[in-house]
Length: 234
Image (cartoon, rainbow, N blue to C red; front, side):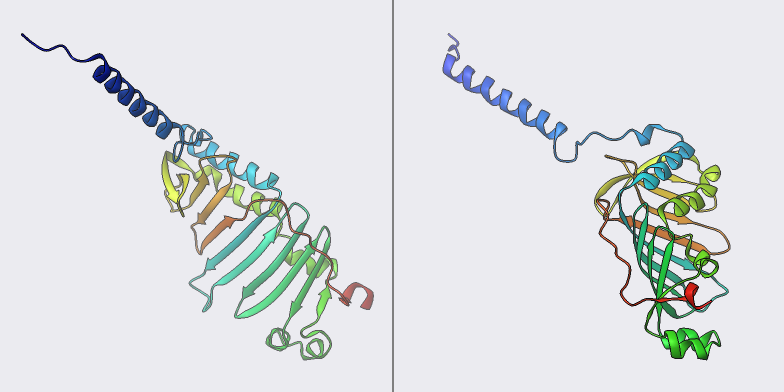
C-alpha cells in the first residue's frame, strides 16, 4: 500500500515553491531589471534626436572631449562643466592650456605666458599672463561652441548618418544603447531614465570623442576676481 504524503510536507513544498516564484519575480523587477526608456525600440536617427534634446535640457553635466587630428602633433582636449548659462573648466590646444569661465554672454580666460609668446604677442604676455581676462565679443566668439546649446547643435549635424540596428550595450556598468553610422560615428546613450548621452564619437578628417557624466544641478559659477576687461581697454 502506497503511503500518503503528509499534509505538512505538501505545505512546506508549496511554501518553498512560492518563495522561489516570489524571488524570481523580484529578480525580474529589481537589480538590473529597471524599466528602460524605450530607446532600444526606436530608429537610430530618432535615438540621436532624443539624445541631443535631452542634452540641451540637462540642468548640468561634466563634458570631456578630445580631437585627434592627423595634421596636429598634439590632440585638442577640453574638460568642462556645463549648464544652460554657464561653463567652466580647461581647454588644451596646440600644447597650450586655457582656463575658461562663461557666464551668459561674458567669457573669461586665463592663460600662461607661453600661450602669448607662442602667438607672437609678447606685449600681451607682460600684461595678461596668468591673469583672468574678460574677452571682447569678437575674441569671445571663439569659445561660443562651449555651451550646452551650441554643443548639441553641432552634434546634430551627424544625426542624418545614424542608421541600422540600435544595439544594447553597457557603458561603465550603465545600461546603454548604441546608434551608429557607417563611417564610425556613434552615439552611446543611457537606456534608463532621461536619454542622456554617455559617449559620442564623431568620425571624419579628425576623430572627436566626447564623454558625459555628472548629470545634475549646475554648480555655482561666479565671475573671476580682478579680471582684466579687454573691452574697456579699447
